[in-house]
Figure 1 (cartoon, rainbow, N blue to C red):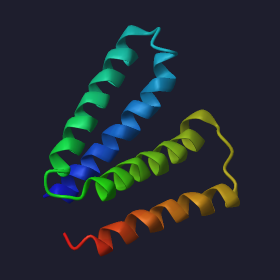
Figure 2: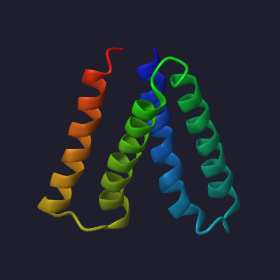
Figure 3: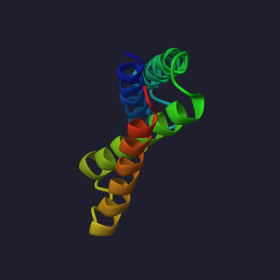
Length: 106
């Protein structure tokens, strides 16, 4: 169950990271509130996950999910560069996430 909570926390991390762009420096009220709520939910879910998972593993996976999702959506939503090298490095983060999960024993 903790891994599912961690995955959900990572998805909310993606939401708040993308929300930062839409909030335009916290100057737009609706995106700012949505971003703040996503931040809160993400951290609460992470806190729940670390009750059963090692904090170092959970934090690395949480930030990895956020990094992969945000970088990918940056390409899709904000016309950020989509290069093979960039995709390769994102792939390395995914390998790290899968590796941490596989050696966690949970």
